[in-house]
Length: 475
Ligand code: SIN
Image: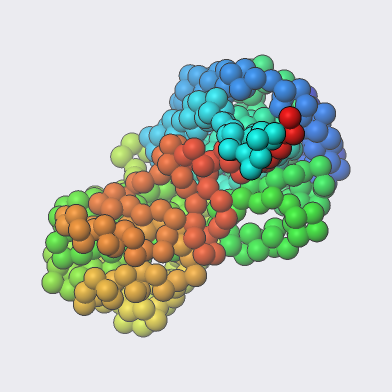
């Protein structure tokens, strides 16, 4: 596949040429993508600005019908889009098809939400006044998306922006640009007016992202990625007080209390920890288990984890694909080695390898883990479950909250009153209680502390693309 830039409804080659896109399972080239520049980003922003009044001026129902058509086309092409995700990102094909359905669900959800952007009237402070509040689109929006969900992170940003009436310039991750190219093709096929959605793929994130941040026509930037880059964007946005939504790093705790149903806790831990080979921002990164069920839990987790096969995502029965690249693999390996050096023991797994240019790691469970290990402090982004013993619920909550991150957290208990208290005590934007997969289009996704600003999904997800206007009328 040969991807081009999509600007103002036209496909263009980039002045810098193209770059190679590789399959992380084999390092083989799967296609090329256009290497967009700062100038081309500027051109896309200008196109978006020209399209803005027309798009914002459409009725919500009209915008919704475009989103519904994009949803329909994505589901019609689920196999093809899933194949492309597996090819350029590596996740197993079944999981990739699941991602396409998840991605499409944001279009359906925000098509409906477009029609619910209600204002309000306020009882006035004088008989000869009337007061009202309306919401209007914020304007041209930049979206910068990561490689771990090549379709779903695009739609989770683009769908609410379009629903709100904002044209978009998208910069997808350089590891997975081809899924975004397919998305642009679908927007074109759905008849989206020119300039409403623009795509700038490219390797020079500093130039493309830099233009999105520096250009004052861009009123809003929404980003998913590391906390480190999020901080840079905040600094870059300061000059124009750029509106930002940031979905940043996580370091999710999983807390298993002694009245948990062990089977549920093991299933939830496997779902949270090993989905996408541990490469999600909401992956459980560290597991805390009350001491009286520690051994039982570790033993059952071992049995379930040993059922997970690693390999090429197109191979039948594979549950974990490769890690995205060598750097990702090295980080995982460094975390495991540090834990072993400090006294952790391997329960299962622990082996990583390179094969035909792909970087793989066995799903791994570590026991006798302690808080001084790097894996208990930093996001791993890989298939390692370090399990630490805690003496009681309070210690578990304390350790869970003892982190600069606050995206997702998980806990397991069958007690309603205990569970409600734990849910309230966890300083996280997302809490999965007996649930290892809380993400859904209709629910707010986002973090506390250094995990970000703003929410995506849910009825909250459209708000970052809207301005609030108070109108005071003298009669
Ligand atoms: C992410 O890793 O940022 C997205 C994960 C999800 O939507 O569940």
